[in-house]
Length: 422
Image (cartoon, rainbow, N blue to C red):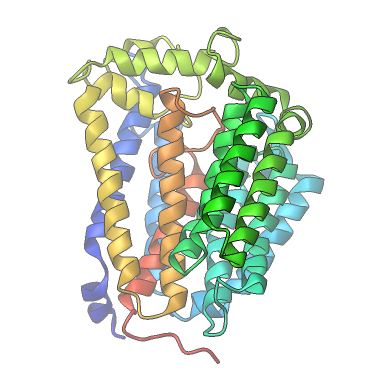
């Protein structure tokens, strides 16, 4: 395909949405660290905004480079890419650099790279490659087991690095699995496990187990003549019960002390108001103080006096809320929603299973980051330390999201040339 023809087939709507989000993120990073007494330049590379400008420029270069790749590259090298990043995650456990309690970084001089960010798109490619086979159906137990194994390997390695937040993002890859025919019951069980985990922090385990028993008996009675459903119900009840009984183990033996406090602070904000609860409390104050239209660009008082830690990274959304108010917050939410809707349209029009699965993987990962990050800043979800896509400061995050998105846009541009398996 000629390059002029390729430019006509690129989905420029998604590209423009990407540009709008990145630009808005850059300006808010500048606002988050702005000091009126110094009046630093937006382009000063000694500041986070200046360094983010460099990440943006390199991300644009990465995007252009991806468009020059042969579209078959992603399919042909999916397993190799996955293997490389799994090896990197293993290496991190031995020789990684520890940052903020997580041993998940590779130090190269003064530059830090986080392989787990890049492992997300590598895992999405591997899952797409595996499911791109006519005989592999997600109603088959073997296909389900291998698909979950592809996801659980990087998730487990990332947890061992102490980065539980990033590890949870890999769970977003159940989105393409659900689209490709995974039994809905599995998704219901997964949501139920998460719900009972949070509920167990509020209610006695005895009460919850009694509730599970009653619900199970009810469903067994309603499906008494369907042996297959009976089996699913019994297995689901056992899994959810196991989840309830494992809450204490996860809190005390899996999560780190600061992560335990964050989860407990979600349930009871007053348990540690000057420690684990400080970030969220200050974030909510900042967002609430913005009112309808905000205080104005560079006029955020919570920002100026550094009340909210990590305001250029995990808590960048509170800068939007304070300086641009409800209007600015809704605009950002709208941009993300439009992008996700657009990507859904692109995913559905793909001619190959590989491209469709990968497309829904992109949607799942961006959706997870977007919803959880904003939910963290307004106190609806524990602080797990994941960035807001295209907004938060950081080279690894921006590069990884750029590769994730533009790889799919490249595949979409060649959707009429269905990939042929060798």
